[in-house]
Image (cartoon, rainbow, N blue to C red):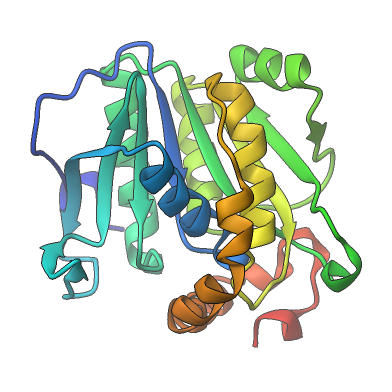
Length: 252
C-alpha cells in the first residue's frame, strides 16, 4: 500500500488552519460533494490557496476560464477551508490521501472535518426536497449534529474516500461529520447538493442562497455528465454499490 508521502499538499499562500473547519467535496454519489463545493467557491468567492498533487492521480489538468488548475484544490473563506476534487479519487490514492489530509488537519489544529456527499435512494424521483443524514466521529462532532438536529445514520456501511477518512479520524482522534443528502446514484444531483449547502450554511454560520444553484440544475447535469460517468465506474470498482444496501445495478 502506498503511504501518504505519495501525496503532496502545495500551499500557494500561507495557510493557518488552527480552529478552522475543513470541508471535503469529492465526486461520488450524485456528484453532491463536487457540485456543492463548486457552488460554495463561487458564491462565497473563496480564494484558491493551494492544491494537492500525486503520481497516483490521473495525468490531467483542468482549464477554468482559459487558465490551468490542478484537479484537487484548496480554497479558503474566513476561517473555513475547502478541498475540492474535480476527479474521482483513484482507489490506489484513497488511503494515502486520507492519511495526508487527516494528518494535515490534526497537525495544524483544525477544529473539524466536514465531508459532503450523497446517499443513494431508489425513489429519488419522488423526493422533492432531499433530506440530509449524518455520521459523526468525535464528541465535538456529536455536539454539532445534536445542536442542529440533523438525522443520524444509525446503521449501514461506508465505502470509498470518506470511509477511509473516517477510519483515519477515528484512529487519530479527529472530529469529523459526514453530511449525505438523498441523491440519484448515477446522475448529477444539484437538488441534493442544495440540501447539503443549506445544512452547511448553518454549521458555518453563513447565509447562503441556494436558489441560483437550483436554477442552474439542468446546466450542471449536462456539464457534469462525463464526470458522473467516470465517477460511477470508479465507485463500481470500489464496491460502492454495496453501501447502504443499494443493489449493484445502481452503479453499473
